[in-house]
Length: 148
Image (cartoon, rainbow, N blue to C red; front, side, top):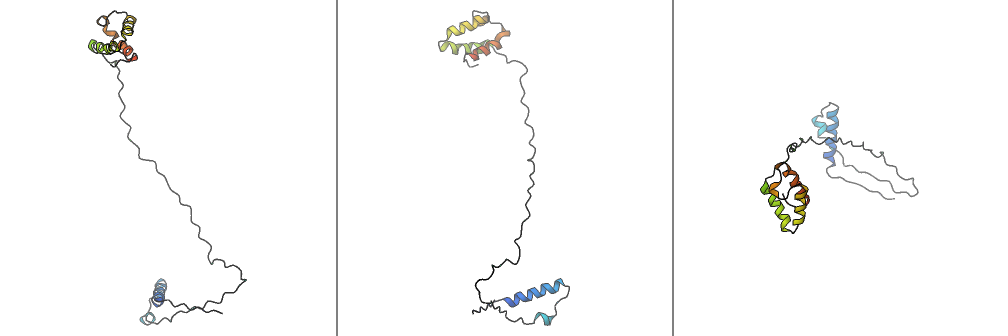
Protein backbone atom coordinates (compact mmCIF):
# COMPACT_ATOMS: atom_id res chain seq x y z
CA UNK A 1 0.00 0.00 0.00
CA UNK A 2 1.27 3.45 -0.95
CA UNK A 3 0.62 6.71 0.84
CA UNK A 4 1.22 10.07 -0.78
CA UNK A 5 1.41 13.26 1.26
CA UNK A 6 1.04 16.61 -0.51
CA UNK A 7 2.27 19.82 1.14
CA UNK A 8 1.38 23.03 -0.68
CA UNK A 9 3.36 26.15 0.27
CA UNK A 10 1.20 29.28 0.58
CA UNK A 11 -1.93 27.26 1.30
CA UNK A 12 -2.49 29.21 4.52
CA UNK A 13 -2.84 32.50 2.62
CA UNK A 14 -5.06 30.84 0.05
CA UNK A 15 -7.36 29.45 2.75
CA UNK A 16 -7.58 32.85 4.44
CA UNK A 17 -8.48 34.53 1.13
CA UNK A 18 -11.25 32.00 0.54
CA UNK A 19 -12.59 32.53 4.05
CA UNK A 20 -12.56 36.30 3.55
CA UNK A 21 -14.42 36.01 0.26
CA UNK A 22 -16.97 33.64 1.77
CA UNK A 23 -17.53 35.88 4.77
CA UNK A 24 -17.86 39.04 2.64
CA UNK A 25 -20.44 37.36 0.38
CA UNK A 26 -22.52 36.41 3.42
CA UNK A 27 -22.30 39.99 4.70
CA UNK A 28 -20.47 38.94 7.86
CA UNK A 29 -17.09 40.60 8.24
CA UNK A 30 -14.45 38.44 9.87
CA UNK A 31 -13.29 39.42 13.32
CA UNK A 32 -9.63 39.95 13.98
CA UNK A 33 -9.40 36.69 15.91
CA UNK A 34 -10.91 34.67 13.10
CA UNK A 35 -8.59 36.24 10.57
CA UNK A 36 -5.49 35.49 12.57
CA UNK A 37 -6.57 31.95 13.26
CA UNK A 38 -3.89 29.52 12.15
CA UNK A 39 -4.82 27.15 9.36
CA UNK A 40 -3.32 23.71 9.81
CA UNK A 41 -1.23 22.26 7.00
CA UNK A 42 -3.36 20.22 4.67
CA UNK A 43 -2.37 16.67 4.09
CA UNK A 44 -4.17 14.48 1.67
CA UNK A 45 -3.86 10.77 1.58
CA UNK A 46 -4.53 9.14 -1.74
CA UNK A 47 -5.79 5.58 -1.47
CA UNK A 48 -3.75 2.89 -3.16
CA UNK A 49 -4.48 2.11 -6.79
CA UNK A 50 -6.46 -1.07 -7.20
CA UNK A 51 -6.68 -2.89 -10.45
CA UNK A 52 -9.92 -3.99 -12.16
CA UNK A 53 -11.79 -0.84 -11.15
CA UNK A 54 -14.42 0.69 -13.37
CA UNK A 55 -13.15 3.59 -15.46
CA UNK A 56 -13.28 6.93 -13.69
CA UNK A 57 -15.97 9.27 -14.98
CA UNK A 58 -15.26 12.99 -15.00
CA UNK A 59 -16.88 14.79 -12.08
CA UNK A 60 -18.36 17.45 -14.36
CA UNK A 61 -19.75 16.96 -17.84
CA UNK A 62 -17.83 18.79 -20.56
CA UNK A 63 -18.91 22.38 -21.04
CA UNK A 64 -20.55 23.03 -24.36
CA UNK A 65 -20.00 26.41 -25.83
CA UNK A 66 -22.88 28.24 -27.37
CA UNK A 67 -22.37 28.87 -31.07
CA UNK A 68 -20.91 32.26 -31.80
CA UNK A 69 -22.97 34.36 -34.12
CA UNK A 70 -21.13 36.86 -36.24
CA UNK A 71 -23.20 39.64 -37.60
CA UNK A 72 -21.95 40.86 -40.92
CA UNK A 73 -22.60 44.40 -41.86
CA UNK A 74 -22.81 45.70 -45.35
CA UNK A 75 -19.77 47.64 -46.50
CA UNK A 76 -20.23 51.38 -46.45
CA UNK A 77 -21.98 52.68 -49.50
CA UNK A 78 -19.58 54.02 -52.07
CA UNK A 79 -20.54 57.27 -53.71
CA UNK A 80 -21.62 56.77 -57.28
CA UNK A 81 -18.86 57.66 -59.72
CA UNK A 82 -19.49 60.75 -61.74
CA UNK A 83 -21.26 59.80 -64.90
CA UNK A 84 -19.09 60.13 -67.93
CA UNK A 85 -20.48 62.57 -70.37
CA UNK A 86 -21.10 61.13 -73.76
CA UNK A 87 -20.55 63.63 -76.51
CA UNK A 88 -23.84 64.61 -78.07
CA UNK A 89 -22.24 66.06 -81.16
CA UNK A 90 -19.94 64.34 -83.60
CA UNK A 91 -16.33 65.43 -83.34
CA UNK A 92 -15.36 67.91 -85.97
CA UNK A 93 -12.34 67.38 -88.19
CA UNK A 94 -10.37 69.79 -90.30
CA UNK A 95 -9.12 69.23 -93.80
CA UNK A 96 -5.54 69.20 -92.43
CA UNK A 97 -6.34 66.38 -89.96
CA UNK A 98 -7.93 64.30 -92.73
CA UNK A 99 -4.97 64.98 -95.03
CA UNK A 100 -2.44 63.86 -92.36
CA UNK A 101 -4.41 60.65 -91.75
CA UNK A 102 -4.63 60.00 -95.51
CA UNK A 103 -0.86 60.54 -95.85
CA UNK A 104 -0.19 57.67 -93.43
CA UNK A 105 -2.06 55.36 -95.80
CA UNK A 106 -0.14 56.71 -98.80
CA UNK A 107 3.20 56.28 -96.96
CA UNK A 108 2.46 52.58 -96.45
CA UNK A 109 1.82 52.08 -100.18
CA UNK A 110 -1.96 51.96 -99.98
CA UNK A 111 -2.66 54.75 -102.47
CA UNK A 112 -5.14 52.62 -104.43
CA UNK A 113 -7.22 52.07 -101.24
CA UNK A 114 -7.23 55.82 -100.56
CA UNK A 115 -8.36 56.58 -104.14
CA UNK A 116 -11.12 53.96 -103.81
CA UNK A 117 -12.24 55.56 -100.55
CA UNK A 118 -12.37 59.02 -102.13
CA UNK A 119 -14.38 57.57 -105.05
CA UNK A 120 -16.81 55.96 -102.58
CA UNK A 121 -17.46 59.45 -101.19
CA UNK A 122 -17.98 60.81 -104.72
CA UNK A 123 -14.83 62.96 -104.96
CA UNK A 124 -11.53 62.68 -106.83
CA UNK A 125 -9.42 64.58 -104.28
CA UNK A 126 -9.67 65.31 -100.58
CA UNK A 127 -10.19 69.11 -100.95
CA UNK A 128 -13.38 68.37 -102.93
CA UNK A 129 -14.91 66.43 -99.98
CA UNK A 130 -17.89 68.36 -98.48
CA UNK A 131 -17.42 69.39 -94.81
CA UNK A 132 -20.57 67.45 -93.83
CA UNK A 133 -18.78 64.20 -94.77
CA UNK A 134 -15.55 64.87 -92.82
CA UNK A 135 -16.73 62.76 -89.83
CA UNK A 136 -17.76 59.80 -92.00
CA UNK A 137 -14.52 60.00 -93.99
CA UNK A 138 -12.48 60.09 -90.76
CA UNK A 139 -14.30 56.93 -89.61
CA UNK A 140 -13.55 55.23 -92.92
CA UNK A 141 -9.86 56.20 -92.62
CA UNK A 142 -9.77 54.69 -89.09
CA UNK A 143 -11.25 51.47 -90.42
CA UNK A 144 -8.35 51.32 -92.91
CA UNK A 145 -5.89 51.71 -90.02
CA UNK A 146 -5.11 55.43 -90.18
CA UNK A 147 -4.57 57.33 -86.93
CA UNK A 148 -6.89 60.31 -86.61
